[in-house]
Structures are given as structure tokens and as C-alpha cells.
Image (tube, rainbow, N blue to C red; front, side, top):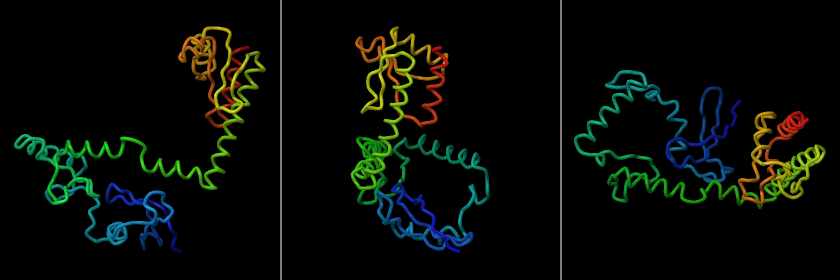
Amino acid sequence: MPRDERSYCRICAAACGIVVTIDGDRVVRVRGDDQHPVSRGYTCSKGRGIAAWHHASNRLDRPRVGGRECTWDELLTDLGARLDAVIDADGPDAVALYLATGMAYDAAGHAQPVHALWHRRHSTKFNGVSYPIQKAAAAIYTDAGKQETSALINHYLANAKLIRDAMTKLGFTCIGGDNAPYIWVNTGRDSWEFFDLLLNQAQVVCTPGAGFGKCGEGHVRISAFNSRENVETSLARIAAALK
């Protein structure tokens, strides 16, 4: 019986979301995934043609050099030698990079130098918040996003209460953990000394208060950002180490 599997297109750098219909070992159909947060159901003719390409009789499944099958090591060695020869003869700008989606050629189809292209790529992709992260941030304000965010906040605040209650029971004065995921523990000693004790005796990592300035000295900060199981295990280790 045919089934749908969600994936993404590998043909170009856009990596559009796709839904692949599979019947047995056959790819029957490929269409855009309308639930994908970035491509929103779009895919070009190349993506929609993946089924035909996947089952093409002349599909290239293994590396080849000079018309014969070879290993990847042989192929890469041959390719490296050819690129070195081009660069030695004509300089590094004689080699161009093609990434598709309009990133490797100008509007007239002329190849661009690799350095300028790579700089443009990184400036576009990494200088600021990426589009998928912007979409994730916007999703927080949907009804489902609000529910999931509230559930996550409640989980971390419950962890914080466990930590605060456990450290208070051990005789420490604690600050925070009510409406924040961090608990400040007054250790009554050098913060780095207490950090070393927990690290070496309990295998638990906290943050020495001295790292926040002189007002943090004598304290450590414990984070609630973890699973319930890890928090409970860490608290048991701390209790055993401080006996």
C-alpha cells in the first residue's frame, strides 16, 4: 500500500520540503510539503521529477573515473590532482563553485570567483538570524506554539523547584528558581572551591558565581535546563557528595 514520507530535496541549496509517495520499493510521486515552515509546499520541476530520476536506468550510483567504476578515494585523488593542475596553471580564480539557486553565476551566466561567492554565501546565510529560526520564533505566537512553550516553561520551573527544595534541605540559602530556570546557591565558601567539589565528587557541573563578578563570589548557579531524570540523578549525587 502506498505511503507518504516527509523529506527534503537534495538537488540544490534551497533544500525544499517534499512529500515522497512510496509503493513497495518504488518512488511513485514527489510533491512539495505544504507543512514545511520555509518552502510551504513549493518545489520546482527538478524536485517533482525525483521519482523518475531515482529509477532512471542510467542513474549514476557509484563513482567513476575514465568510464570505469572506482572507489571514492580514487575519485577524490583524481579530482584533486586535476584541480591542482588548473590552479597551478591559471590561478585560484580559474576554479568556480556551483551551488545552484542563483548563487554561482551572475545574471548573464558568467562564472564568479570562488572567494567573493563564498563570502556572499556566508554573509547571506550566517550574518544574522536565519530564516528557519525566524519562522520558529513566529511559531511561538500560534495557539500550538503557546501551548508547547507553556509546557516547556512549566517543565523547567518544576526542575528549578526540585533543585531549590533539595539544596535548601541540605542547609543552603537559595535565591531564584521561582520564575526563572536558575538557582543561586549561597555556598558559604569560595565559589570555585564548591564548583570543584561538585565536579570531582558528584560529577555535576554548575557555574561559579565568581565568574559574574565580586558580588557572585561565595555562590554557584545551578541550571534547570535538563531532563527530569538528569536533574533527579544530579541532586542525588550532590546530596551524597555533601554528606
